[in-house]
Image 1 (cartoon, one colour):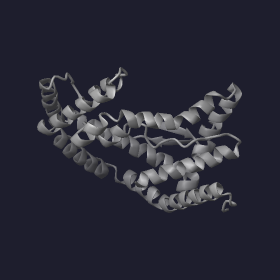
Image 2 (cartoon, one colour; image 1 turned 90 degrees about the vertical axis):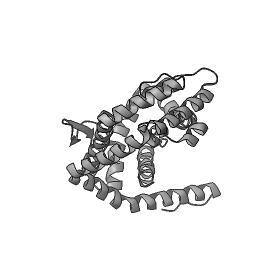
Image 3 (tube, one colour; image 1 turned 60 degrees about the vertical axis):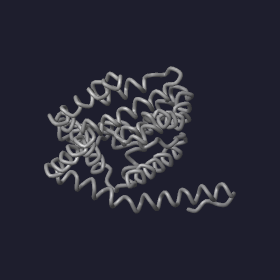
Image 4 (cartoon, one colour; image 1 turned 30 degrees about the vertical axis):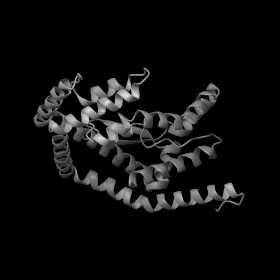
Length: 267
């Protein structure tokens, strides 16, 4: 919930910045793969699977929501497209960097509307860039450690055998999900629901769901103990930004309602 509020506020700030440069911008969704956010290891909610399959409908809806921005960008002359990208991303005249826990350094322009939004929302764009990129890497590390654990591998193999018994060949849940979402033939969503429901049942009977959940929690705790300053830094920045984000969203909604009623927007 909190990350959604911060994302929404960031998108509002980016849009205002782009508009101020005489360019249009439509807010980007926080994620285009909500099914992966819910089930990063295996679909294990049978009721959700029966209703949603692999989240194909939600993914398509998010793609439709992103279409105006994509169509606008591709409809611009080449020179304006370059200007749009530079305005959004910034240039390389000034760079902020983050050293990653896995090694190496990642950078981002200190200019542009994205960096300006970070500055306005978090009060320190360089500190937020480092905190967000480091914690994102730590999430990837957590998932990687979980999937590499012998207990997870053993449970995944039991899950695969269960799926085989149900007439579905699948080495891993993620490979199966990619295979299903690549199916564009008629009736694909109905097949998604059948396969995802079998996946959820096998996730329970094989112990994969419980094993993944336990390992994920243990790895999250271990990484937070290993990198306490990084987690604390990101947490402090988010907590400090939340009041600003909520106030900005309230103001934006008020202005939108006033505009719809033909009133003068608040300053």
